[in-house]
Length: 129
Image (cartoon, rainbow, N blue to C red; front, side):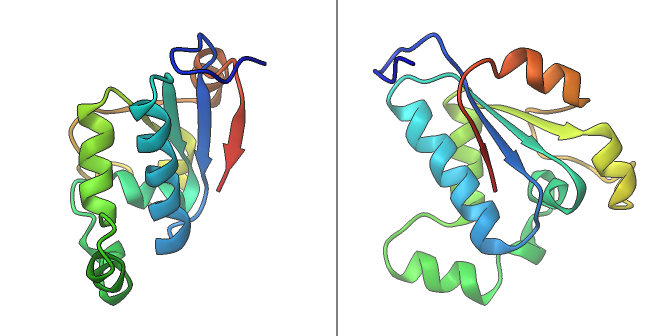
């Protein structure tokens, strides 16, 4: 599989947890891949959908402040950067229902779709967090 910048293979990232470490790293990985020219699709499902809500403050507490204090971008900043760099952000329709988040406002540039949409778009490497 080619892994050079500008590769035609998309990086698919599946976020299934709302824990800060997993969500932060999912966005860090997505931003890094987008920065080197990769197409990136971040698919959040179940509790991972919380990272795609308009209000991400429940995930950005003391742990996020500690991360930012080290000079590393926080979760909200990384998510915004991903949006600016064209990372495709997808909230799983079924995952939103499972997490009890149906109807909760999502962040800008987030679409709601199913696993088939994700699998069709992410025809390259996949990472699960």
